[in-house]
Amino acid sequence: MKGSAVALLSGGLDSMLAVKMMVEQGVELTAVNFTSPFCNCSSRHAGCGNQARRAAETFGVPIRVVAKGMDYLKVVEKPLHGYGRGMNPCIDCRIYMLRKVSGMMEELGASFVVTGEVLGQRPMSQHRQAIEIIDKESGLAGRILRPLSAHHFPPTQPEVEGIVDRARLLSISGRSRKEQIALAEHLGVRDYPCPAGGCLLTDPEVATRLRDLFAHVPGYTQRDLVLLTIGRHFRLSPSLRVVLGRTREENERLLALAAAGDALFMPEDFRGPTALTAGEVDPAAEKMIGEMITAYSQEDLAVCLIRKEVIGAGSSTFDAGQKTSRQEFAAMRIGRSQK
Image (cartoon, rainbow, N blue to C red):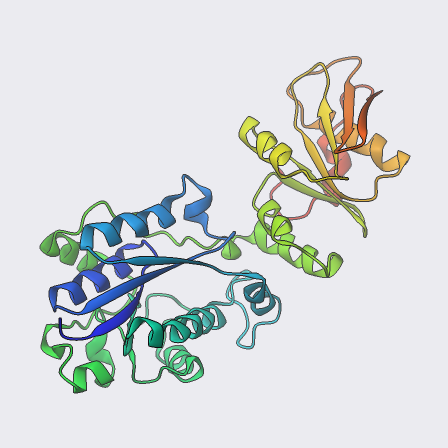
């Protein structure tokens, strides 16, 4: 082996190619995969997390999985370098991950970091000025190697020291993935995901929900973050948010996420969404939640019985009346989608 490095391995094509290129050069790697409640891939079939593990296994590289903790949410809440099109603090996110990785390097005997970044591919974090900021503020300037775009930057420390052969690195830039797809074929890299972005913080609806959370729930928890990715969200008052499941799977997730003292509302004798509340529920709010369930149900009944269950404190049943129009609650919806 020629040297040791830590590689950021998201499970996407670019990071897989960067790792494979370093393996081909005999660099000893430890892959690091960061997880987050806002990873679109992991919320749909656990894609990227599993993809990263499979890629690491295929390449014969050990991998560490690191969860972005509540300290990361403080970065999201007040990013020094601002947001992209949603609540995605792309520059600050890269700095956060690289600082975490920097803290592992001594333990792992690594002297540099490998990433799959491509100059000009991501509009916020992969233009030249952003990359310079990331290098400087991560404390890793000169020690971050981007094999796919290396020839667009000055030689890094591992190139200067001969750990990595710069002649075997590339000069890919821009948003097209044609060169990466051709390279994957050449290197035998297969089973990679589609190139679509995987961060839910770019989603307008999730971004709106997160702003609402920051505004109304200063003591938010990890569970609050997971809930942001589920169902339809409504704010009935500054102190009460309601989440309605959209599918059977989401209804089951809401049931699983309910904790002691939470109030769940469920259709008693008809098909409809489960509602999980966050906040105090008074009688007026209880009635409104029942009406919301009827509005989003698939049936039109004269009598709609709703079961209210307070976790750890028993249950009761009440009549929500006839089916209500969804428009009654449009102004309370958190987010753009009205589906």
